Length: 160
Image 1 (cartoon, rainbow, N blue to C red):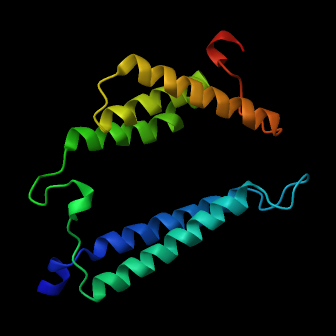
Image 2: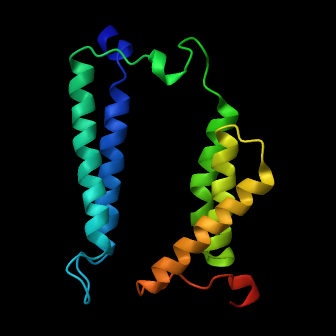
């Protein structure tokens, strides 16, 4: 029983679970498209299979006794507790698009998510992070529109 407590088996199982969720979610998406051989579902299936493979490899490493400690090149202190504020800020940045993209559109949602992730990594520049996020998300919206994908309006609140 102590072997189960000493090793982070849950980590490998969590990665496999995420891969399984991706594959399950891909059943709602088309694996092929009319204009191309590969559709949006194919990418999600690939990510899911990759995550399951990585989860299995992680479980193998854990079974072989691999110790997961920060290395010197990672600039991390092994005894430090997790920065919960940074973690939850990044978590909000990941959840935010699912909640507001229909209302705000991709550029504003991407801008807010970018700023939150930059904050989680310790960026003190709020205004420049917002501008960079808006430019990157706006370019993404334009490029995907150029490829023929409809990502909704640029700014739905303004009717654009």
